[in-house]
Length: 75
Image (cartoon, rainbow, N blue to C red; front, side, top):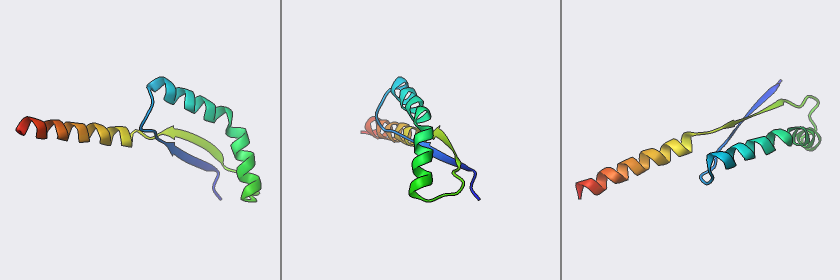
């Protein structure tokens, strides 16, 4: 049985404040999301939802920019 559902959220747009606001909204909507999951998927036990910000896209973009800068310096 799954008792905890870890959800990794990422965005390519938005400031730190906008990301924080998004997570506050997700936390406020957690009860609604759980009830929808339970009814639509007919779950007897709905897992707890845990929202985490996935920084891997930001990190990948940073590395990509660094590589592009190195290529520009070589030219």
